[in-house]
Amino acid sequence: MPDYRQEARDALERAKSLLAKNEEQSLRYAALELRIAFEALTYSRAVAYKDNLPEKEWRNWQPRRVMSALLEIDPSADKGGSLSISKAPAGEPGSDEFVDLGSEQVLSLRQIKDHYDALGSRLHIPTPTQRESSKANDPARLRKRCEKAAEAVQSVLNSNLWNLVFNVTSTVPCTRCDGTVRALVNPGTKKTEAQCKTCGAPYIVTPDKDECTFEAKQVTVKCPDEACGGEQFIWADQANAGSRFKCIHCDQFFLIVTVLAMEKNLRRPEEDN
Ligand SMILES: [Zn+2]
Ligand SMILES: [Zn+2]
Image 1 (cartoon, rainbow, N blue to C red):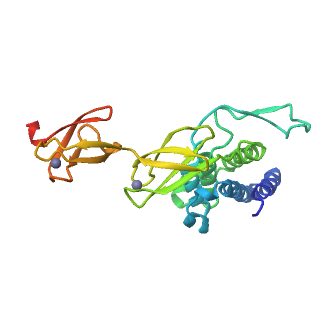
Image 2 (cartoon, rainbow, N blue to C red):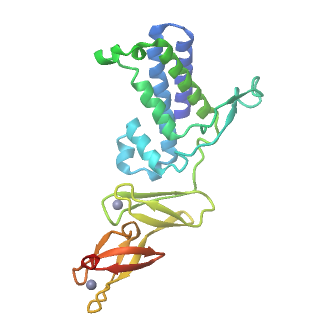
Image 3 (cartoon, protein in one colour):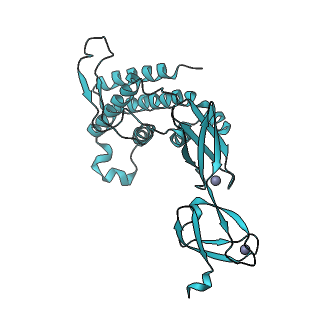
């Protein structure tokens, strides 16, 4: 497996020396190197999560696709927090000085993607409409963007959090649609919930050693028609007050009017009048 972190480090160094040239023309090339660094970081994370990525995503690697697939399975993707990092690696001169990264997390995949997209938009010459805005061509803005991105890459390379791998991970096909349900469970978690990314079907996930058990989150409903009285399962996310359900035994429609814990009160829609 290629050393993606080293590739990110190399690209960052090239970007830094381009920025140091202080030439307007070099900024675009610095932006390109920084994008390469973000791609390398994304792939290094993808390698850690290989078993969770669908074969299709794994075979057809494209930064954007890998990024969105990772965003789905990475539980820390949208978590915030405040963090300071040392300006130099521990033990080296400058390591007692800190850079405050503000309220952002070290760098979530979401942030990586944001940087990546923002840099990408600066790799093309502005369209005639964009030219009307003075911002589009402002080298000072591009320099600032590059500097922020370089800081972000550096923070990932300095961070131990980045390659933290969670010990229980699992993927199952959704039983309601063709989608995939992915669960990524932290050590010590006894039970958690996961949703199908395609249709939103809820599942209860129970980790057990190296595997997870997925249980469809459904409720049992008894047909209120006494002549029928048939039982069936309804997905928990579809058993909301106001939603309709069709009895599979007698084909009648009923309206769910209140939801009390796991018990359902059902009425025929015509009784509303
Ligand atoms: Zn589904
Ligand atoms: Zn029925």
